[in-house]
Length: 251
Length: 352
Image (tube, rainbow over all chains, first blue to last red; front, side, top):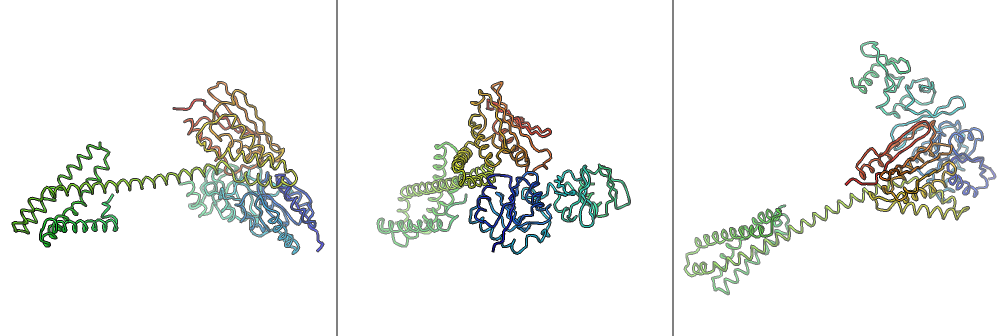
């Protein structure tokens, strides 16, 4: 088997990259294409170099490991390497081939790389993205605090607190912020579950609004209302949506 | 507390057995030493001993009552002397009444009358013995309760200690540092050794039992320097530390391990989220000397989305300051543009 493989290391700490480099020297068939020190750089290099294997840290500036996987079009075979044990489940849900807890031994690393190579040989690396949608909530908080969106070739991290409204589209959801509208491939039900019900309320099948962005309610008919947002946007509630709104606002 | 002889089966059985033994001795003494007819001796023994055994259970209340009140010892002795007098009179009165009613035999009645002093003395002896047994029991129970209370307390203290350590030594800091050491060992063995030593000193200082003790600024600064050295191995040029401390402040006092969480906070919200270098500045000034002011600031990436769990470390620090100095206005947090600053005042006189 003379096949060669390419790899990319994404980790913001030099010693962490050094040890991967060191351990990888046992595998002459693997060529390291590049090393990246943050998530944005990682995305760019992955799109450009299309490595077979990806060694990925979770905690990084700008874009964390999970958010990186979310925005790339084709996933390489991923080996996570982190000091945080609480992300293991999420990593495997993302089809990561292995999850290395820092510090790890050479044997443990070999084991992970062998698994990864098998998967790469089987050609599973280019089968596209896992179906399951990413969960960026951590055990520290049950709710997400930011969402990663792509605008053209740019990647943007949108803090949830800057989002005033979610609107359902065909197979995506629009996020409204002061900066404008962003699209993301998620479902309304998923996002509703990720948001703090004290901050957001689903006033319609197709709308979730941020409660503190509501300026006033205009009468529409007996069982529904029109919500006026700070941005001037007007959204018609559904019957159940209005009931929910009454519950959270307490009137 | 319930009477020990009623509370536990084994104690009840012991009490009964002791009385059976006493009855046997009593019978034998009357029969062989005092030449009383065996049946009469048995009845005498049964009547007097059973009455005493029954009354003996009830003196538990007087003992319990008088031991639970912390009176003077002479008061307690008086209490017992009085209850002893009452009980023994009651006992003899009842016994004589029953025996006089059961027997009309002249010889026995004469003996009964002659033996009153002997019986009274025996009664005093039994009574004292019982009171003593009760006292021993109460003492033992109190000690058991105290030991279990102390045990509970110790467990609670230990739990609090573990919580404190977890809060002080961030496990991710530890594991990432160990990973750095693991990486350095091959190509930079000397640096790796240095790092192990720094990490050890860091841990030793953190583990010292000085929760609410004060230490000098100099010690705290040395600790922070070690901490930042370790972090620098991970973050390299991304982390810059810029201290400026007035020489005269170094000997001033502040709570042990109070500064590290503030520096850690700066790293977490500054260095973790930024690709650019983050400078952590520490300024200590002490004019007037009764107040030491320490300002810790860092720049951060204002574009970076806010991190979760923000402020828990700072709240802990604020709580500790309140605990030590009795004031909750010693720490001020300013945030402007790309700068985060915490100003903390350390009074040099503790509230009495």
